[in-house]
Amino acid sequence: QAHPRPTPLPRYGVHGQVLGARTRLTNIGASNGLLRQYFPKGTDLSIHSAEDLDWVAQELNDRPRKRLEFKKPIELIEGLLLQ
Image 1 (tube, helix red, strand yellow):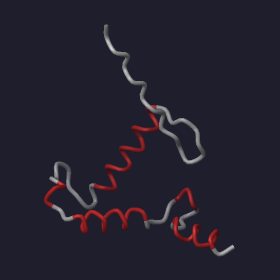
Image 2 (cartoon, one colour):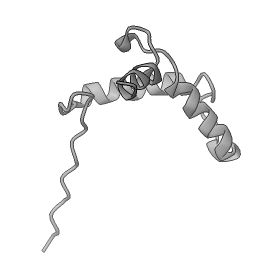
Image 3 (cartoon, rainbow, N blue to C red):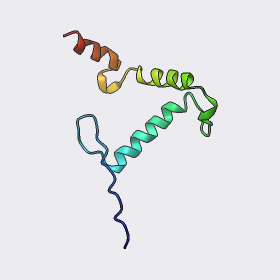
Image 4 (cartoon, rainbow, N blue to C red):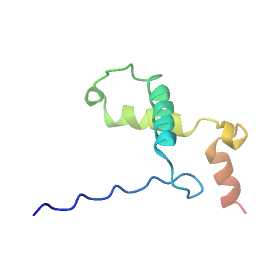
């Protein structure tokens, strides 16, 4: 008797809505474009140190966002924490 296949977990967006496949592909494509600014396509990431990868992650996480009216996420978080 065959075992049942596991059901994939849904992906959730910023406001808790389930994201469709098209949205996920768009997000992956955008992420790939940002990463390629630091690592050309086909780059073996294992040659980079954890510190290098952490630096790139920090750079990407600290960039201004159009969705946030061109503010950085930390700017909004600081405002909430200081209330």
